[in-house]
Length: 186
Image 1 (cartoon, rainbow, N blue to C red):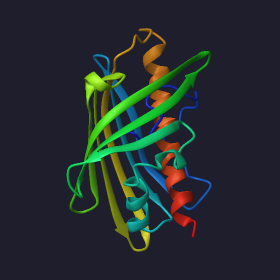
Image 2: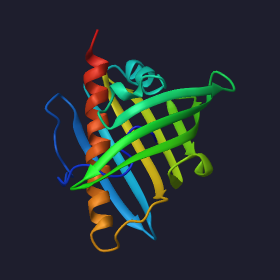
Image 3: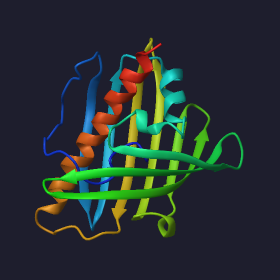
Image 4: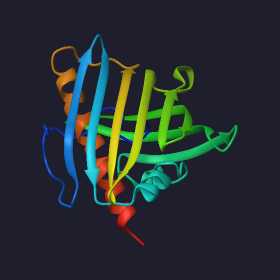
């Protein structure tokens, strides 16, 4: 979804780590196949699930979650659960930086599930689809995040995919940590 620096940032490889807060990463994988990238995260954070969901659906303020998100705007709403959202991210790997715009149709489903689909002709990706599931677990919050995306810009074949995989993993984890911090604020 819009909640990670869509393409490029740090070079640390993270797989099974703990946050500096009370959260635990149960799964953090990124893979690529045929120029598409697949992100799967499963985390438990020390935060109220309703609050986390509210932060994720505050489309005009997504930049509070991560430094990589430079701007987010609710373009319009078709209903209480169907929205068009524009998100701008800034991401860098080594010396290469890119501003990425995504316009997404976002659907809020029952059970605190959020589905987003990027509109390719209005975005800097050829394809992006993401699913967030927020679940209350005895006062903690389980977040399941899955994304599938294909950038519309050239990625160097040998070094690009591993760098993007690391970057996507790192940014997704950064977003999760940002959610935990925001959700604990009064």
